[in-house]
Image (cartoon, helix red, strand yellow):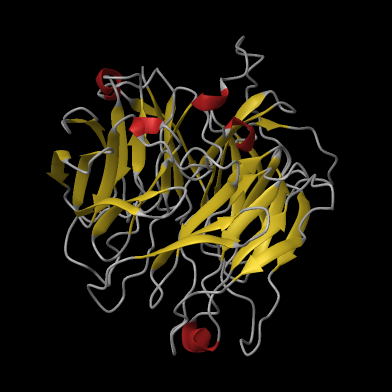
Length: 455
């Protein structure tokens, strides 16, 4: 079970003064309500460590989505491509919404009112989405530093800067978003990949995949546990790296697997032993073009779900194909062609899994596939490309899927048939994925944080 991985309760931790003090937020106790259920929150990219993209929130249904209205909006100060996280702070007795701008300013808002709780600048470019675990917010920077901030105050708890691997002139870029879990009983471990050094130096050094201790680990926080870069095809010139968001799950042998994809020329899906870093399996995607990174993170169907005893990894990339792979062995179960292979931004949105329905975005198409077979349930064409990952909420048979387009529009569609029930127009290119938590829909675009709720 992955429930222990979510780390939804934020613990009270000693810290120095925050960059900005708490605003006049309204605590949940003042509103007369208890802490939200763990499954109703969204503390990490993809909702949970397996990246289901599925909230158990029952208040935003397909019928309720048509009545969603803006509850609040708040300025982030700059554009954010990172997707928001929502977690409960026992210290503050509030549900908090988090995000990070491209300029490296992390912000925390009262999730109900939008009041600023804190913000903190790391002074580096950030595209990595935040992950909240046991009272700490983790994200990576393009300068190769993993940041760990106190989730209640914004104070720095520790940092880890990737070592420079010769002949590269500097550390690799952490574009990937971290996944966090306790896989060996020692406390939190943060898993994240880097995409190499970038620019004219990209050919000097391929990327790596890292396991780094989190705050509260028995050996200390922000220390390297292991690193993996034994890619089967490192290539020449532009080197293989990791852009996508890793997922974490336990297989039927009791091993914790961390699963992710690599960029060209390797363009493969890897499963590593999360404790030791040893390779469990590798699956190579098809060659349909010149630049076919596996840029979308994996979505894991846990063992026994939908009749698959071993569990399933669902993943797609720029080859235009959605794959279903055996979680234990990496063997292909089925594949479905989403579109022609692309060297652009197609194939970087992660799928969402609800029961036997898999929601996948590719180019300007949105597909609902049967998770068991890959057969099409429905598909629809959007008005612009989609790079954001879908988010699903609501009870069975009354679910809604939210997804944003590059034209700035956030959409809500009935999961059963793809009929549109909600739209919200914003300015700029909507790249960050939506979050559904504690009765509200959250998304960010053009430097603003939006929260929508039923009336």
